[in-house]
Image (cartoon, rainbow, N blue to C red; front, side, top):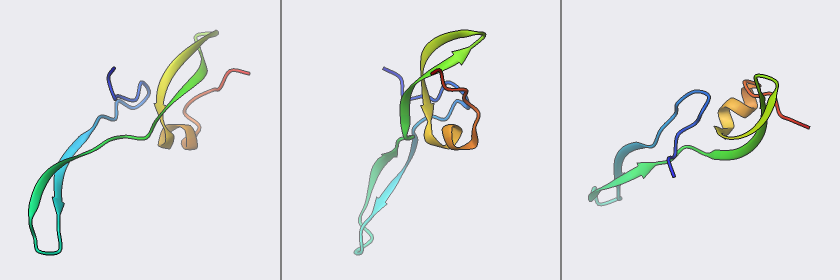
Amino acid sequence: MSKVCEICGKKPMFGCSVSHAHNVSKRKFKPNLQRVRAKINGHTKKIKVCTSCLKAGKVVKAT
């Protein structure tokens, strides 16, 4: 199951966890994806959308 927003294409990013002693280890920043029933081309479809797209109003929710 892919962790990609179907609206903006946001994907997991990679970085480092840095401790107080500056020990560095790899980590992943995952987008906050929600499964939403949305209207796409007049039809209701379940899509995975990040919360920033939901908050910005880029998705029309189906009722």
